Length: 207
Image (cartoon, rainbow, N blue to C red):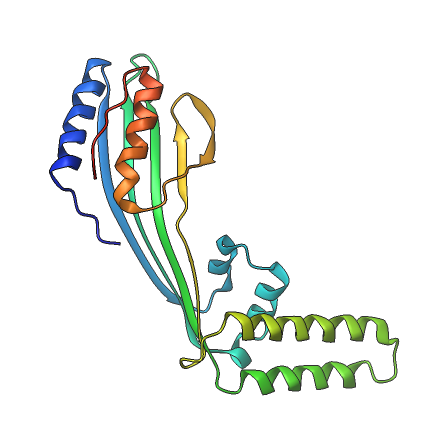
């Protein structure tokens, strides 16, 4: 995500600054970028993936994943800070817009590796009740279909993306999801939150 502030963004920020100061508050903003390359399947959890599939990737990562799982996150955050004299800290209202990407490559022989896992399970339950055996094999077959659906023909490349907006404060105790659909509109949605919270007319601009 490349964050660029044009004249209209700066104009809105200056108006928000003046509005906040009118109420004895401050406006702050910033960006954050993080990158990691580790064999940790927990980075897949925010992407609403079936937990059973994440567990299978974790349990058989050596057989299925080529190298590491790469995770990258870029975010822009806006904050309305309200000093509260006599209290330990002030009141923070924050909106964060993120772009998250997780990707990895499957081993070239990942499909045959699942065949071997199924064979191992069949041998394990050869002389026992087959109900549990059938369930485990069925789960692996569903897992295989899922990998085939999400995988790319380009070097077995697999990726997941999301762009959540998180909002905290603005007169409400719980953190909730927002509706910002692209980084260029993040300031617009923050402006809506600030004006609504301060009961001031909306600041309109074209971005």
